[in-house]
Each structure stands twice: as C-alpha cells, then as structure tokens.
Amino acid sequence: MRNSCRAVLISAVLLAFASAAFVAVAPAAAASRTNRSTVLNVLAGFPTEFKFAFRVPVGGKPGQVPLGTVVFKVRNAGKLAHTFKVCSSPGKITANSCAGTGTATIAPGKTATLAITFKKKGTYEYLCTVPGHAAAGMKGPLTVG
Ligand SMILES: [Cu+2]
Image 1 (cartoon, protein in one colour):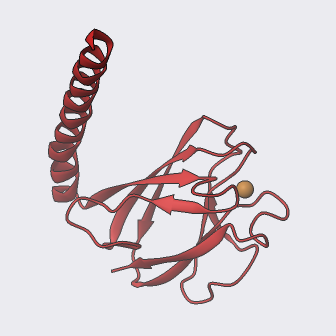
Image 2 (cartoon, rainbow, N blue to C red):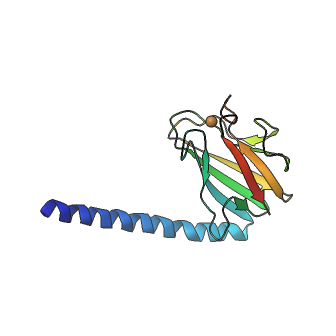
C-alpha cells in the first residue's frame, strides 16, 4: 500500500516536471515566431528504425512549417547512426539522395541542430543520407508555406 502511494506521488512529481518543461518551451517558440524562425523537433529512428517523426510546432500543422528559418532539432532515438537532410529544391519527394543541407552523422541518443531558411513555398523532401536508409523508408515530405 505504502509503495503504491509512493509510486503515485513520484508519477505526480514527474508529470509536474513534464508540464513545467512544456510550458517553458512555449514562450521560447512564441518569441522565435516573431523572429520568423520556427523550431521543429525531429526524432530519427522513431517510431521504427528507418523513420522520422516530427513534433508539430506550436500553433502549426503536422508536416508543415512557415516560410523563413526553421531550426530542426534532431534527436536520434534509434539504434543505428542517422543523418537528417532537407533537399534544397521543392518538388520531387521520392529520391534517395539529393542536393541539400543536412546534419553530420548523429550517433544513437545524440542530438544535432540544423537551421535552414526557406524562401520558396513548396514540398521539400527530407531524408537520411546513410547508405540504404532512405531507400528503406527514411524519407518524406515537408510542406513549407
Ligand atoms: Cu538513417
């Protein structure tokens, strides 16, 4: 009985911390929006090894960012090394490689930040440049504008 009470208390404390962390992020995102920059949190290797997952920006839509500077904060949640690259030209979203801007190799559990300024609306492809990963599914569309 006493242990279950303690577990509930610990859960409540963790939840309070998580809520505080979320609230702390919101003003920063609002401030960056006035500077025309958007922070987008990206998980590599999640929900499965050869996938990316995006957190929806505050006030934004899934898979969509506004024109301007986007700061991609990429965390490798997988078991293999990955990269995150955004192709420089909108349009084609099925390539396994492209010209663009990307991170260095990110080891599992590590994070990398990539800032890209989008000046043209469109759908841009993102992918992982580790050989075979994009072909295995580590790619997708990002709508800008
Ligand atoms: Cu990869």
